[in-house]
Each structure stands twice: as C-alpha cells, then as structure tokens.
Length: 194
Image 1 (cartoon, rainbow, N blue to C red):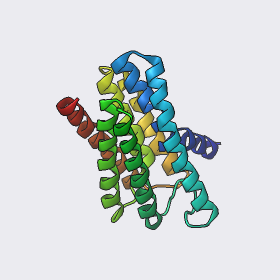
Image 2: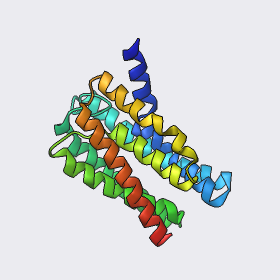
Image 3: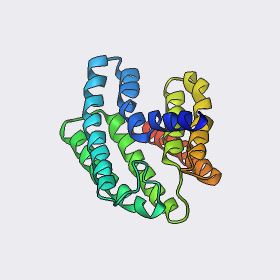
Image 4: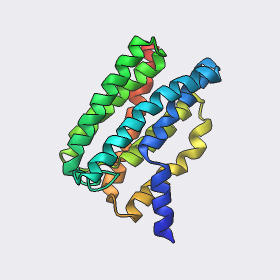
C-alpha cells in the first residue's frame, strides 16, 4: 500500500507535470489576466510534451531505464536535451515578445540544469525534490508566504522517492537544497531585471 502511494506521489509531483503550472501561477499573479496566463501555459505545455515524448522514446529504445531516468550515467543526455528544448523555448519567448518574468525564470531554469549537470558528476540529485522545493519557495515568495503552508510537500515527495528506491537520503536532501537555491537565485534575477 505504501509503495503504491509513493508511486502515485512520485507521478503527480513529476517535474514535467509541475512545470506546466508555473506560467499559470506566476503570470496570473503578475498580470491578473487568466487568458494571457493560459496562453503562455499552453506554449509551455508543448515544450514539456516534447520533453516527455523524448524521454518515452529513449525508454522504448532502452537508452533510459525508466521515465525518471534513474541512472546517473543516463542523465547527461537528459540534461543536454533539456538545454536544447529550453533554448528553443527561450528563443520563442524572445520572438513572440513573451512575458519578461518567463524569460527570467527560463534563464534561472537553465542555470538549474547546468548546476544539476555538475552535481550529477558526483551524485544523482532528486529532480522531483528539487522541482517541488523550487516551486513551493517561488510561490511562497510571489504570493507573500501563503504557499508556505505547502512546505509539507517537500518531505512527502522526498519520502516517496526514497520509498520507491529511486534515490537515497543524501540525493533527496541535495535535490531540496538545489531547488531552494534555484528559487532564491531566480527571485534575485526577477528583482534585478523585471
């Protein structure tokens, strides 16, 4: 039973699923225009879908062990493809005169991918925990602390990743710290350039 719950938690808090909602939450808060926020959320969705299809294809070819890309030695390809797609995403934001806050956040995510790649040479940090940590801290900052109530999700996701044996405790801790650091870095970029 606990294992099924852990798999469910890992699925719904998958980084790709969580990132779909970032433009919606941030743009709606900044511009108070739901249509505008949904438009950029749809734009983001297509790139995240492309990433999902790439991972699924690599799993079907046996290049990746699973959809979580659990093996550290497989992650450089994942990070490389992430950088390619995010570069196109960023280029589209510039060409379509996208929201400045999305441009800044995208640059922050690129920094996160680079940091993850460096960390990956020594340790397979949990991207699930990193993403939920970054998202919750970013929402808490943007929505003035309201989302601090959801901090319990960080240890919940870490527990799930441990329970299904995708990560060790140090890997979840490093993922959480990476997510928090990334949120603070992006917050600094937004305050400086937005």
